Amino acid sequence: MTTPIRVAVTGAGGQIGYALLFRLASGAVFGPDRPVALQLLEITPALPSLNGTIMELDDCAFPLLAGVKASDKPEVAFEGADWVILVGGLPRKDGMSRADLIRANGPIFTGQGKAINDAAGPDVRILTVANPCNTNALIARSHAPKVPADRWFAMTRLDQNRAASQLAQKAGVPVASVKKMTIWGNHSDTQYPDYKNAEIGGSPAPNVIGDDAWFADTFIPTVAKRGGAVIKARGASSAASAANAALDSVRSLFVPTPAGDWFSAGVVSDGSYGIPEGLIYSFPLVSKGESRWSVVQGLPIDDDARKRLDASAAELASERDAVKDLLGP
Ligand code: NAX
Image (cartoon, rainbow, N blue to C red; front, side):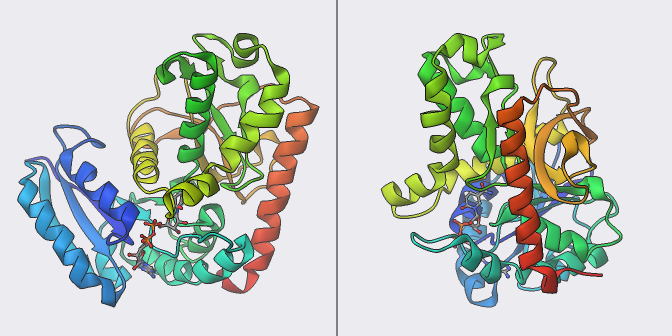
């Protein structure tokens, strides 16, 4: 039998975890020939309810599920992991400031970064979903010196999917017609959903939509504030769409990117597009498969876009400064 992919998921007992685990176990991410072993991390009081979820996983009788273990110790959950999906943390509640969230969740990622360094497999990849995801990834990475820079990702795929969906609805076309949707920057209100380099049915999105004011006045704020709008409507933060985006992120790295498209994720900046090196910043990416990716180079960035890219980089630099005491050597 093919060696299973070992996928560690933190916060596995939460609402995103519940929407994530069954699809991971079904083969939706790594394909129908690749068994998956799940290694789940939760805080101690959540282990009994996580056990109920594991009973449900058993009851699905997924042919590809090669095993499930649960622990409240990161070094046990991350042991030999090929992928670590960091979901565990407090979600932002209505009225909670971003600064409060950074200070509440940041400390989780010091210990988990060390455990990834010490226990994960030699080829591990890490996707951070828990917010503020770019800065949590930065904290974890700073405690994992053994893990190379190109292994770290922060999730902006939900923003990409939200943006593609808004463009498709405005243009009155299926969402599959929207390609090359970049999210630049931070997973926050300063992100820039780059409609100018996006395509709808093979043509530039601005030409298809033909309403420049709509992009600045409606599209960008709708995408950037969508998470808050879902919280207001649902009384809880995005869960199924967030889990879906996490799976899309991993799958887009795992399989080669189709010609004529790209996808977005936060990665460690190498200075591309003038973004300061070392920040975890969302860029347009293509993958050659097996998580060998590169930043799409040479996209036109006009003055307005430049200001937006720089504003998001400045916000990430200030988040980094706000957690200086949590960063490793
Ligand atoms: P839930 O509160 O439903 O679940 C979080 C789970 O994490 C809980 O079961 C909790 O016990 C567990 N947990 C807390 N501390 C932990 C630790 N130290 N180790 C392991 N597990 C721990 O939240 P949920 O809605 O699932 O959201 C999880 C995270 O995703 C939040 O931080 C949220 O802000 C973030 N999100 C990120 C998104 C993105 O696009 N990047 C969008 C959706 C979501 O808001």
